[in-house]
Amino acid sequence: MMIAWSRCLTIGPILTTGIVRVLLSAPGGSKPSDLTRDGSELASDNLAELMSAATQAITHKLIQAQVGRLLLLHAGAVCHPVTGRSLVFVAQGGTGKTTLACTLGRHYGYLTDETVGIDADNRILPYPKPLSLRTDAGWPKQETSPDALGLLYAHPGPTVARVIILARDPDAAEPRVRELGLLDAIQAIGPQSSSLYALPRGLHHLADLIEATGPVLEVTYAEAESLLPLAADLIGGYS
Image (tube, rainbow, N blue to C red; front, side):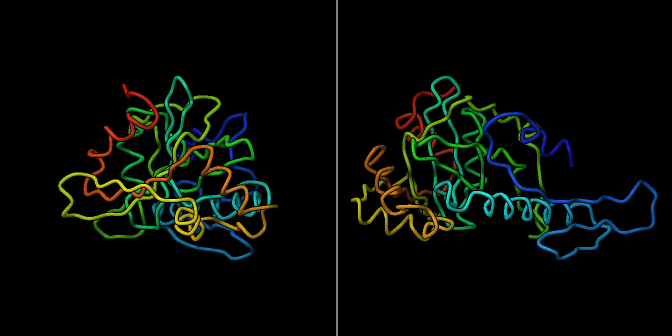
């Protein structure tokens, strides 16, 4: 558990605030492990199941802690390790955010594969959680440390440089890129934000972000590796 979350166990401006209590049974003990989330309790002897549930619970808690404070997007993000220029990729679940974070994170600093928190100055508060990798069984996902995957460390002050919206098409031989106007971009990103309604001037905040870093691009792709050249174009060359 500690190894998987090692990048969040640090002092600094990271997104992981709030408290989740995780109790793991002692080696050889007979008591099942349990997880407390919002007063509910999960009992299981399956460590992978507990790890997956813990990731969901911690993410839920941190989102609750930042409601009304940050623009929270259902997205992954990486940053240039030298400049801090960051690429935010917004998408629905199952669209490939984690796979893309793994791929880009071997060349750029890993920020998150799940929730991107952005302040009024377009700075990103990293959430370098374990990456939730799908298995053949589907669930529980395998919670894997960024270190185990060889992902680079992030710049200490990442800021949003570009925002893209992901769409998967297994038949796309090459990525297709389409610029979105401001209203179309807001309409596409809005449903992938957490508690936009609770953020003071939330729509203005989102519009300001788009105007400062845009245009937002809708990117249709098949394989994560095919987006490496696009990332280089948007936030700078990769290692």
